Amino acid sequence: MVGPMGAGKTTIGKMLAEELRLPFKDADREIEARSGVDIPWIFDAEGEDGFRRREAAMIQELSELDSAVISTGGGAVLLPENRTLMAARGVVIYLHTTVEEQVRRTAKDRKRPLLANDNPEDTLRQLMEIRHPLYEEIADIQITTDTRGPKTVVQSLCRQIMGEE
Image (cartoon, rainbow, N blue to C red; front, side, top):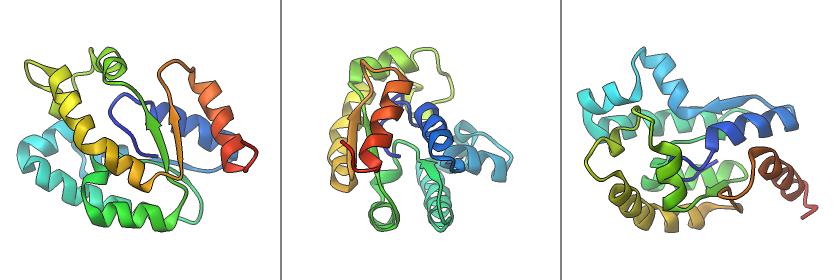
C-alpha cells in the first residue's frame, strides 16, 4: 500500500490483511521495532536521507515475503528502486486522500516529522504535488478514502483484487 500521510494505509492495511487472511506488515513499525527508536528520533539523528536508507532496506526485505499486505510510509515512492521493487513484486494499492482530509486526520499526530512546522497544510500540499504522480505511476489499484469508511474501502479492494470490480 502506498499513499500520503493520513490516507489510512495502516488501518485499511490491517483490515485488508485480516479479510484476505494474510499477515500485515507496516514498514515504519518494522523499522521502529528493529531499531528500538521511533521514526521522529531517526529523522532527528540521521535526517531524512538516513531514514530513507532504512526504509529502502525494509521494503526490500518485506517484498521478499511470499504473501502479505505491506503498508509503506508516504515517502517510500521517492526512491526509484523502491518504486521498481514494489511494482515488480506485488499488487500496489494507492490509497488517495485530499490534502484537506490529510490535515484533518493528522492534526493531533505529533509523530510525523515532516509536519513538525508552522504550516503543515502547506507541507502536505507540497508533498502531494511531488508524490501523487509517483503513487499513480506504480499503482495497480487506486481508491479514494476521503468519504468512505475503512470497511467499505476494504470491501471494494477485495473485489478489485479478485477481479470482480
